[in-house]
Length: 164
Ligand SMILES: [Zn+2]
Image (cartoon, rainbow, N blue to C red; front, top):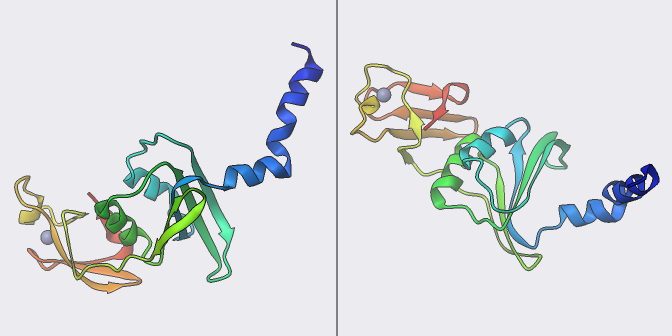
């Protein structure tokens, strides 16, 4: 292959048409309005296992609030447990389910009053760190997030929360 042919092959990737094609999703989930800087954490919550394409936008301009991250996941709808984990990371995230290029459902999950088995208690002597006990936290406030362990009463701020 000559150099000119290679250049011709690569040109479409940067063209406006191809950018539009990349950003449209036929089937899957769009997670929008993620707090800027949280997208990679959200991807790790989703286990980094994907069948289709995943598009990640970091630190984008948001009309609602300063900067945001956005994730588009092809051919995947999230489980309620995954949605709950993401809501803990980014309480104002919106989820859009896309089928055949159309938004069939759009929602912002509400954090439950109690989250079970999602957050690790940092207190080493807390019973919830025993393998047979599921952690249980009361949600004191959604945004900024604050939770309290139901077993040892330790209260955690957003920055202190480690997801299981
Ligand atoms: Zn605890």
